Image 1 (cartoon, rainbow, N blue to C red):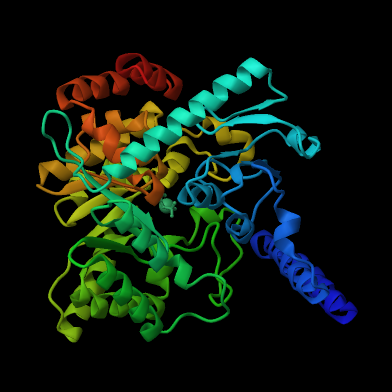
Image 2: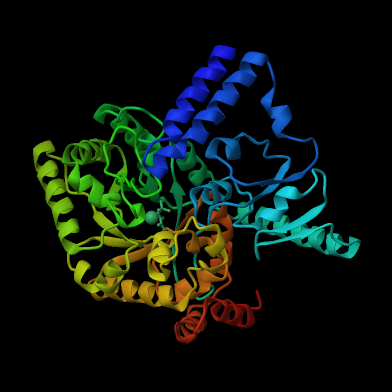
Length: 465
Ligand code: PEP
Ligand code: MG
């Protein structure tokens, strides 16, 4: 055990000394794994340590994805995290578990005594410490109403999402694994609007082979049957580096070789993934989507490789679209729409790039709101650009499941909402209570607002949310 501890620490020191801040931060991950193995060797049951036996809000500086999924979900009521922004991947994971999370909270919460009573509201991002009995009663009522709403929505999960005046909106799920796809089906999703394929590539030391990828895409395609699955090609770089891809140090990785840029610079990795997707396509209803496209040449190069593979593999053409997450692509949407089959707006990145705010930055977390009129104007421009050429536009960022955003997005003409799977029934239920002409009026007003808070107030007043 001592040898294990010392070896881990020696290696962690080497990793911590690496020149690249992203790689050097992996030293903490190494120590985390080291501690976990040590606990197993010592026979310590980690679950008991991590999980108290009463319903609990977890307060932490940072949570790794493995921490987040290792808590007993029956007893965890939510997460309060100091680091990370509202669209950081830990926050997205908490949502996928159907749990509320507040990120970017003040450091002082770390000093809270274990066992302190708190009220956490994921809706408005507040944490009330040692609340009064009246506050507690009100919070319990609100929570019970929320649970009841969720239960009713779940009962009608398989009914279509049609507004009160007969307008259909496609509600699909975001997935990052086969298990997510299975869950999306149970939640009444009409397909997968975003399959993040990074799960196949992360946390390993070598790239997955074409056949390994093919097996996973095929099982997801078969699980979903006739329902469409939009497979997003590898989106790494930025906050998600891969150990087996050599990358130069970047001062601004979010503005560097990310997403499609990285794939186009590594054609063999890209071709391998495209081949695996195309071979899996006949087993279901797959579509392809490229991330982080900012320039039409990137789309054309990717499209050309795809066309060539279609030919060599002799597989019928499948639909191909792009994510709109870079402002330049949103501004040029009508030009892109002549060539692509569809758009899916990635509001997590579109918000970060439009507002020039790192989506992981805790101090800016409360300002990163996709309902900012600047972001809404880009969304409107994207939808109009798509419709001008008879193409459709969806949203696959976190904004798509925000109850304040849904009415505005439908008013702007969005065709599809792709949301974290637990939200699918709730989003569908909300849509059934809306009427499009009112929403169009609301959307017009939202575009004229000056701030995100004004937009939220407008929606609250008009729809009595
Ligand atoms: C987005 O940017 O909105 C998106 C859906 O992609 P990701 O969160 O994986 O960057
Ligand atoms: Mg993105």
